Length: 367
Ligand code: SF4
Image (cartoon, rainbow, N blue to C red; front, side, top):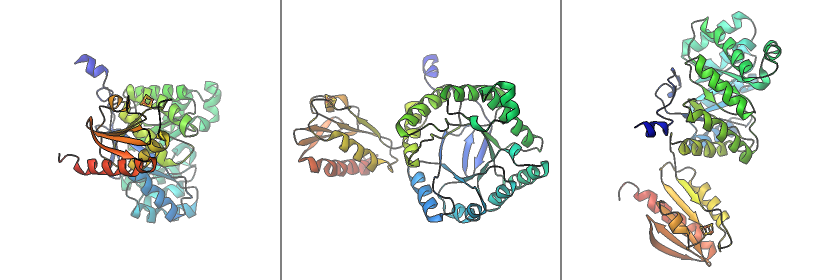
């Protein structure tokens, strides 16, 4: 119906070409992808691989690693061989590193061909990427717009960012290369939105959307949520990065919650928890945070409620599959609206509730 289409951003998704980052399709009919970037020194293979695995376990489908120098580039074949998800090499200004990354088995490149030097150097990168079917993301940030465009547009405006990206796109198209993704990130939410909206009208390449330098986790998640939320609601965006100054695994929580909120994709339990109030008699904030952290690796889509009191808790969370509501030094565990267990002692709330949640998850789908 018209009203359901109006409320369904999936139905409005812009038609784009698709590219494949390893086995992960981006654009076309593929779901909106979730990606992030490591912040370990790339050449520290154990640390970087550890972070890639943590990100993958939290729902990250593509991981980008910075390749600032030869030392980092030399570790890429080990990283690519062991990583559970495809890797993208983020390279600035250096065509040799880009070719090296492709030869090491990287699944995607993020490089702006206009910044890597001579036409021959661009040829070399494009030839290597074409030979191995490696897509290239052109990533324009408001801070990296070329001087001429800054003068022409009076600053790093959305128009300037779009023109900058298109000039890099032209360099690839001239060489017959079309495995392209584009990003246009600004730390201004509205500039980011305007830039992507303009670009969506100009090309059919898939768009990697993100607000750059969004900030510390709480503020950054809000800025990204607003910017990416507007774009995704309008059907723009094929892969998302929520950039936060903090643990990249937190980016996964924000990104998946964003997609879930828009009805685009769901992964893992939705945690319903109350804000607490004068009726709360247990350490609800600590309990909710502990439950959320323990459930991060769980992929089953369900609703888990952590509520402060028995007066309103079970009622407010009656849609939950399983939940706990606090009482005086006790907790009531309910499943599908029915009370199934009473737990005594503050210290027992978390372990007993987690036991019941795990039982519920194990029985999921076999009830
Ligand atoms: Fe307060 Fe209970 Fe509502 Fe939590 S569920 S905010 S404790 S009334």
